[in-house]
Length: 240
Image (cartoon, rainbow, N blue to C red; front, top):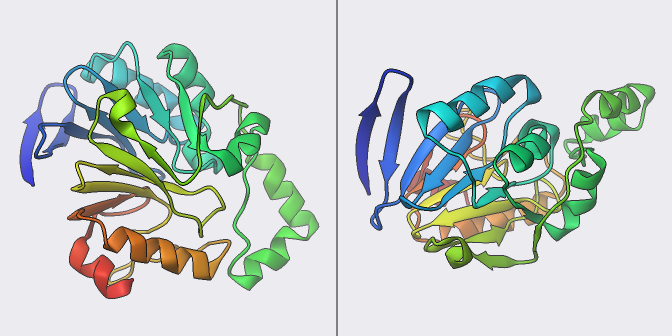
């Protein structure tokens, strides 16, 4: 993998260039990492971040990267911190929303399928506090344009790559594999704690373990989670 540094007056964003010449930009970081993938003609956005990041997101897309149209908005899952700006992105950039079929209804409702593990979280979600949390994290509904089942070939958008269903954190979690070299893994992995890749919250531990194992068996060298730092393949294999 080749890494280049791309600086301008508006953005000091490291640009990742894959073997096919695709450029990957980290548009947002912090509460939820958001990535833009371009082949020079076509562009895809992976996740959208929180609604309080909309101004920053739209400014960077339009001003820093001169984006007027997105060929796809891929949601790694429909939790609020990943999908709160989905409706706005779809409208402003005429972007079809790509989501796993099991979470299309959540997107349509603007609601989050909160993970039920660890057990203490499951208990909280069954209380009045849990109901209050659910109301607080509702977001503007959006309609999915493309539904993924187990795998979606990204050649329809002009890229060598695919979307892979990776359940565990949520029922419809999915990861984006580009050039069999770079993976955007949403919350299937976390890059927050040292020497760890497992997210703190999840729906199904066994499914999550299998999903991480499958990702470790791809040709990807670096895995980009939605939270925290990039993860090296050696660590993912060790923890799979």
